[in-house]
Amino acid sequence: MPWFRKKKGKIEPVRDEERVVRTENVFVRCEECGEHLYKKELEEALQVCVHCSYHFRLGAYDRLEKLFDDGYCEELDAEVVSTDPLEFVDSKPYVNRIAQAQRATGLPEAVITARGKVGGHRVFGGAMDMNFIGGSMGSAVGEKLTRLIEHAMKERGAVIIFAASGGARMQEGTLSLMQMAKISAALAALEERHLPFISVLTDPTTGGVTASFAMLGDLIIAEPKALVGFAGPRVIEQTIRQKLPKDFQRSEFLLSHGMIDEIVDRREMRPYIIKALDFMMNPAITSESTAQLSGLKFQVSGSHP
Amino acid sequence: MRLQSRPRQREAQRKLLMAEKNRLSPGHSTSAFERVQLARHPERPHTLDFIERLFEDFTEIHGDRRYADDPAIVCGFARFHATPALIVGHQKGRDTKQRQFRNFGMPKPEGYRKAIRAMKLAEKFERPIFCFIDTPGAYPGIDAEERGQAEAIAYNLREMAKLVVPVIVTVIGEGGSGGALAIGVGDQVLMLENAIYSVISPEGCAAILWKDSSQAARAAEELRLTAPDLQQEGIVDQVIEEPKGGAQNSHDEAARLLDPVLWERLAESLTNNVPDRLDRRYRKLRQLGKWGTSEATGTP
Ligand SMILES: [Zn+2]
Image (cartoon, rainbow over all chains, first blue to last red; front, top):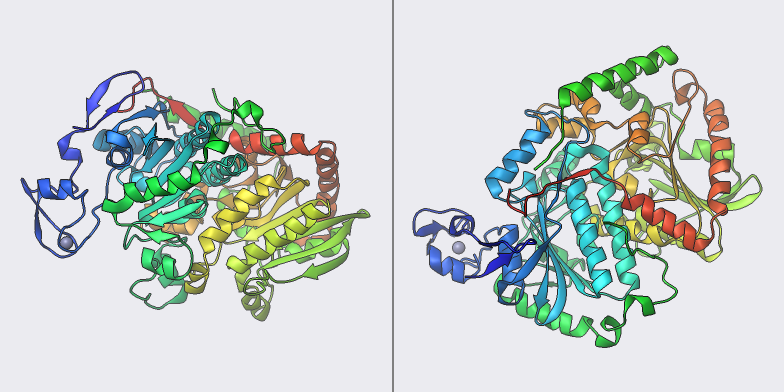
């Protein structure tokens, strides 16, 4: 069984019941074609329907486990969690919403970040989780992703982020919006160091996440039929007062409009990423120590404790 | 885990502070939603109104060299107290025809691409940049999505962080989410007293959270989108006073109040050399956000 090595050495297996989107004992019904799928078979196919290739949504830990060599990685900055800076109350106080999301998902935040190897390359990976307040990006998500990029700069590694998000987190107001600028600035510094950023778009990626780091990859790849856009389909329908075309804002639509590099089936994702890293992780660049780099615009060492 | 919050106590403190502020400046107890309405006031000065009053010899430039010109963003060079500078700003129209022509100040990708093209021109010739923010948001439409609205915004966020010249941003009206931020990364972020800057419109927020857009006033309060709120959070550096009752009452007076602040802020940014300027800009963005620390190792 693949597992996570937690920051403080605690080993915890990924619980089985967290892995499958909808459990009906041993069978799962495909949301797309309606076929009944044997749970174990679905797990072996990385949660992709063997009949119609429908990609079930994946949780953050599952994503990272499927990315890293032997599913092995070390979680980073897990202690960074959301607070309630605005004392925001909608149908319930935001503090309760956070606590509830943590209990229900077993995740500390809507993004999990980790360090490990992919095809032998040093990789700093992040994965968002739709089950945690809609995968929304608040201050903690922004901070964890910025630190992930800074870790990569410090240790001369690649950054890979799996996006899955409804956008910026409303309950933290304008602070959430500012995370877009903060992460993008960190990516400017990463770019300057010639270190790769691979952005993987999964279903759904919208709003402030798309309009910041998700569309800034050196390589942008998407899972099949993922919804990817800036404005949500409902907002657009309300604005233009007409129905949207069927494939609008899907991966295939983005590919044909020149917005992404490739659509990659989840079962082919790891080999695809490894090929990309083989190209992008040039030892002539990655073996240089940070101290050797001169003339950089951004001196970002020691930006966080 | 610690989520240090004693909402009731802090809420009480906030109310006390507000009351104190109102006592010190009577007549200024404007509610968040009143400010939203002032920020959207049809007679409020827009970018071109400020350009006319603050700059000389404005020369507009058009187009993104990729697809089209977007009238929802204006760009051009001008002189600010004799100093050549670049101006970039959202533009809303005043009458029906102009409003449609400007697409209500909602840019499409070509608008953002024109803006960054112009900013790189300013960088090349070492001229400072003034950005004016006034948009309900980036245009949510089929054509905008087809041409990469998200990519256009994202690209600007990254590229503006790298600009070696001073960038002074002023939120003059509506700061509508990513569509505002896409020309809003700078060394200094100023905000007119009744301008707003928000992650989502109060109506949009209310529709999602309460399934009722008539709760917009309540959403406006919760979102903390006013200039004083944002200054407190460190997002805005300075709040600029408006003429009594709001900037719509006197464009001349609104410009007169903004002018010395722009000048001071430009002078301040010019005192930094390029590495310092970039470092400050990075660190300013870097410290934005409020999060907590849990002792737990991931799963609480
Ligand atoms: Zn199926």
